[in-house]
Length: 191
Image (cartoon, rainbow, N blue to C red):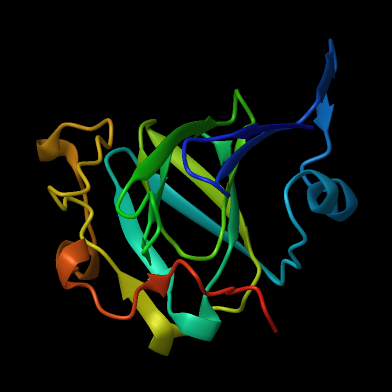
């Protein structure tokens, strides 16, 4: 697998080695050993899948404190713009974001460490997104930041009139007003 650093430390793009012929293709979508060596030691404990139609925008979500999650995201059908926003107060990249197009064609994956908010927009007619998490989902510890925060300024690759949000995702606070963010100097991986 090929690991590419992004402009924000810790957020990386992973591209598997794909073996294809007239029958189709094969690739190793995840190897704990290779991931630990190439990215960082993470123990994933939950796999999630989401199916959405064109224009759906989900995010920007995170889990607070000891419930923080790292995510390894990939698309198995369609195409999305996957986004990670640094929400670690004191970080030199606080409020900055990385966006990567993930698709069934490019087979890229995005690793988002703890301390980041995550969201995605669906750019194809339909998309199925799968992601691994290194901490169990805790609904009482959900946090979020507004997808359209002008200070963050994410280009979601959609026309505003095409954006489809859940009611909950339409009401998140701006980053400057968000509570219980992360601290850059805290190790959220310490047990």
